[in-house]
Amino acid sequence: MPLKKPFIVLMTGDIDINHSSFNQRRQDIIATTQYDDILMHIEATQFDLILFDLTVNCSIATTPDRLRHFCPPWMEEMPRTAGSSLGRHPWQSVASVPDRLRHFRHPWQSELIARIKDPLGMNSKTPVIAIVNPAKDSQSEQQCPAEFDDILTGPITEQRLNELIDLWKTKALALDYIQILLSKTKNNRRLTLTLFEKLFEELPLQVIDIKDALENKQYDIAREITHKLNGSVSFCGLMDIQQPANALESCLLNNNYASTHRHFLMLQQRTLNFTCHQKFILENFGKY
Image (tube, rainbow, N blue to C red; front, side):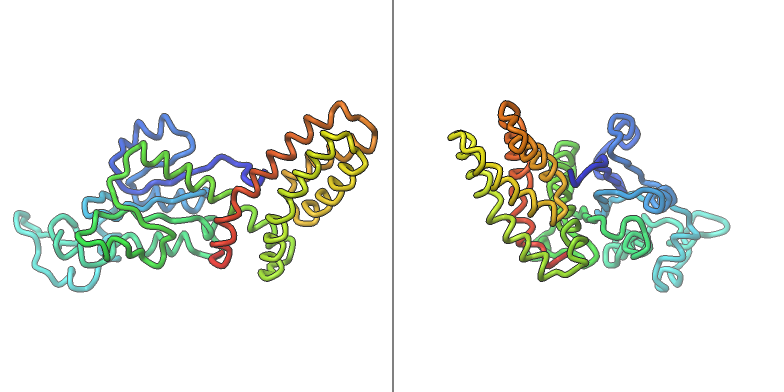
């Protein structure tokens, strides 16, 4: 199958979830509000999905020196915070200037995005989803920062998170198919798209024809169609379909008709698993 490893999600910020209990229960999700921990994870782990909490109440724990490095010059020039004999600049307490902070990107966002999108990094192809406050008007609610793959309004409950993960698991499978064919065609995008169109058109029809031939005990016809299908998926590197196609063709060559039904059912299901991504692949192929 294209997706062989566990689907791993990194959550940054609060996202309305108890991080300590969540990390204990879900081995496929890493949830943290610690800035340095986030940097460590994105450099050490290849994630399938990254969620960024960009809400106004987002809490990312970092050091004053690091925060000072990312904040704009006007914060350095603001009066020191009262109540301390030494005095503190507002950048040492982000909460001291909440209104101004709402008008520029979170100070930690730029570096994290740059680290993730680094072409040499482990997560350069990882989808990044922004979690934002509900917009006051419908127009601003539809705007998505260029560096993010999608944008969602908070709060993100655990139930909604599970639905989001299921959605992106499906998308990840489709993206894996795209990468498989691009690799086979040496990144010839035009040829890859043509192959997808032919596969989506021909595979379902071939499966139907094989089924009819087997039911009518026309084993020579079933073998010929299976051989053609097997050649197509082998050329395209679709190993998950090739495996049952090989097994079915072998049974038909060796007159082992008793086992053909089992292998055909697997071939039928694997083909369906592929063709169910047709809409997403054809509509989004140009983005990847």
